[in-house]
Length: 613
Ligand code: SAT
Ligand code: MN
Image (cartoon, rainbow, N blue to C red; front, side, top):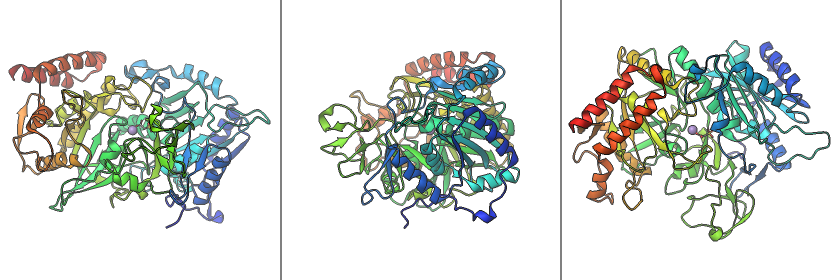
């Protein structure tokens, strides 16, 4: 076992290195003229280069190395206090026509935004090195692989891209062979005057995360936080890719991917969309509580889905690593993630123990007596504040995950048997519901609501509609996105098999405010019911909102769950759903006549079923 990260694409011998693609070269010089970096460095993706960058980051105080005996080759970064999450209010979709960005996005007129960006970007890299970072999303060689080149002045961002994507020469070679690529410009917006001392986490109070979907360009300024700065991830693999997917007939989704194998030995692949910080990573790495069941990980955040030559729905995880929320990740909740984080990991904004290891709320039941908190201040259990930031993160290679599926990076993807939508709902929404058909499933996806988490700025706990968990990530008019999903279903129906669609809610609470369902590994019981439905071997009863497990169909054997809690978990309160229907109607109205009629029809059908209940 090497101490170095083993995921990097090995460096091609210098003699074999190809010419840089001329188009990329020209673009890089143009950007350099605008940003005026002191130096330009092309990133090759080698392990040696990663090592050098990590040493550099240690020397500038951006990261500190953790105790190598406890956490080999791992590092802790503390961000600026203002740079801890995605900034939805500073995320812009710039299309010629405002209606093409739709009511759920911040729209700006492209020319106006270009002028604004030019203002902040001019000279933004003075005194810094501009790294040129070629990357691939998806296995190189896959028909679904897509390429990009990001320039950035943050070595922290470079090493993060190195873990999250296939970064370096192999991607550049694919571009040189003619693959199209998306340009992405990133600057922390903190130019250095000659002789000026740098700060550990340079950033700017003014921030922009800008997508130009029509020209397939990304510009980001002022932040080094993952979701704002690793542009391959949300900006490309979701916002820009969703537009490519619309135009090319596939789907770019905020979904985890898992392979589920029941004791029978026959495997199923599931894709599940939950909003940020609602447990996608935990579900992706689930240790099933049911004997003989196995859940393997393919992806924890993003899935690209398409209809394969065989007519089946296929999916890949375009990423190569996990950028997971640390708090709540512990031996009880996600032992697989804890194992994956044994070494070669970059932690951001977690707390540090006196012996040079990391800690966050939920890692252990017992709190350490003393810590250095995410701000670098002394902390004790009675400090009255969390030691780790609620959106603190780990960045780790997918290969290091003990539950990674053998087919996780299959260029042809995996065949998807079911799609799951979920959110964080304290009330109303049952543990699991099955959609009546694809269109009803699209209605479910379109109407997901979830309590806001710490993954983006805003009031934690506030309920908001987050359709398909894509509210911050759809790169075009959400109503058109709904229409694309409906159309995709029509195309699937013409082919072999349409996947089943389910909705889940692990977060329903009882009158005393505690969670009704134990969650985590016990969610395998819900998977068992779903698999039973896929095989047509397990019962369901109709309800106004979809099919629920029939009496006894959900295996609760051995669970400490009383009859009252079980009833409450599945209670469908018609009055509460009437109110929900009114809220959905108001939400749908924001899309005007761009809303597909099928969704209005689904709402009418729901109301009819509620009235008849
Ligand atoms: O910060 S990220 O956008 O990368 C993670 C998330 O919020 O889903
Ligand atoms: Mn996410």
